[in-house]
Image (cartoon, rainbow, N blue to C red; front, side, top):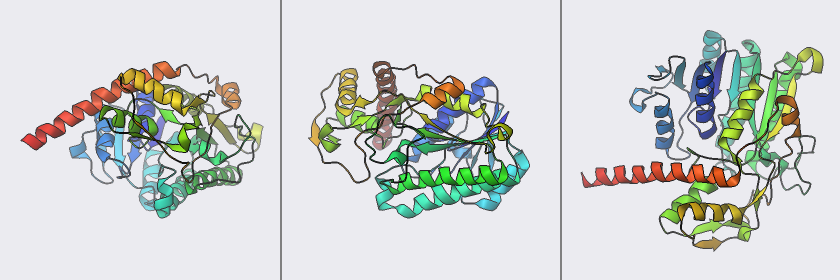
Length: 350
């Protein structure tokens, strides 16, 4: 298959791209490489799949030096005409749409970018799929759509009409938009509500990296809601396995009338935040200094995925426990960021 992966320089998109290439598919990677967090991490991910930073130019294909079936293009989702040209020229079989403005807390500071990227950008993807039909569009939603619901585990059949952050509201809007386009134009769509993904090459603004960086540098970590939080931490390899299985599980318009599906994709095993911190401490062999803070606006106390629909559909079954997942993450973190610090120190001395 020829598959477009948007957000290909991002955490999940990078891992999905590598998995698809390993399977032998042709992949076009798409990303705007924005500066929400240090773009160098995105360039380093791209380098791992043969895309060098010095060759990346806006709206120009870069051929991977490692994978003959991989090309990358830097582009904005809001550039509708260019996006339409891309779809018209490539004639994709499937789309894995992971590009979005991420972050719950950042949506309080910069709401405009969420509307442009997550709403306008997603509309452009849907329009492109409408005019240049694909077999399947799988897209990233979020566990944040559940808001502060007290019912657990969270089910895709639950009401999600009360998001408590703009980020969550944009993800809920994506689900509604996808339903409309599936209904009107029979575009097969599958939404995946992600639950706290972690692992190697993870985002530096997420808790695992923030904790590891602070502990290594002997700085206190911020522990929100005084540590009374639970998250359905899900290791990246399990997430990727689910996404790859989903993209080939195409909703049937004839059987289902409207080819629209929603799934939770998580671990279905909430972890107390203090237990997660304890696991990082053990792997770094260092106790963290902790600043206990109140709950932040937009945060929720607990996430817990009911993954039964995804298990029934594609046999999804997470395999990585917390101890193994955190071990792999910390090993990568030390090797990557310590090496980066040494490189920066060398540049300063030079």
